[in-house]
Length: 406
Image 1 (cartoon, one colour):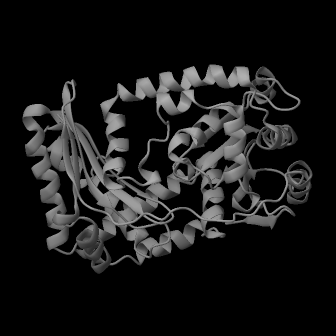
Image 2: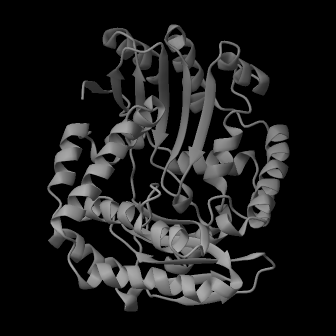
Image 3: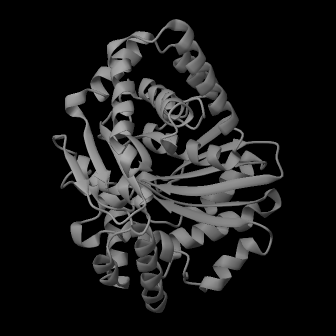
């Protein structure tokens, strides 16, 4: 993987990969998310992601929106429990425009009070819409069940009560307390001379004052399995079964990624899709998800089904878990699973926007980036013993939690 690395004087790390394409991608990722909020600040990181586009010292909201869209580009952002990102996609000839714009947004956002008040209502409507979607809501409520009482358990959007209490002063205070140059990465994928790119990023981002992280996050404590059923006025029953899983730097993370893909990945031939949809007709969709965090992680299987079929579907999930716990996977089956995952990663690597964000996240958390070839070698090295160990550590019956919307 041909990428270049350097660090600005203020501590911001930079990674760039040159590709021969007319389209470029550029972004900033910050190691700050919803888990860094105090209880009364719930939803603040996501709120900042919204309002950071609402004005800077020299631009109004409409000027920010039009700056790239007038030349066919796109400006975007996201918030997770541990990170916030602002990024853009644009034609290569507008690299300077994109870098200058994103630096202005990240460094000089002014958070006008009028815009803050308007955006509160937008986000409250987003919360209301989310609450009306049980297939989405159940994921957050399951994390609240698993990480009970810890900041990482909370919904990223916040609550109407916390959002209504936000103001410009509170936004500025949160940024001052949580956004550190030592925890920022600038990432780029595009066709631009590296020397020119280095000069541009240094020029536009070096004015940001250096700030190093002083204290870390509150680590997650002891996981206690739980089962809850909640009455909901819905056509389907919704269910998640899962448990705490490996953290980001655990040596067994990649085997669990493979196991997740085998059980309920994107492919139609995943074990759960074959047993629950193709063979039984019990669900429209079933999926497994594994999310690693810096100090913990979560694995879960979700499905929605007709109420009368709920417990039959639960039995199938538990049966698939038991098969993986009781019997090591054969070499031919494992070889097919590895080949499938390698193919999926190779195809995903062709999405240059995802590649840019992947480079940035890897550099942010590991301070390095593995080549796609080295990742393939690590996948090929996974053994039946590895999957057997993961199955018996993560899918143990007495460590599983269950949340059902009836």
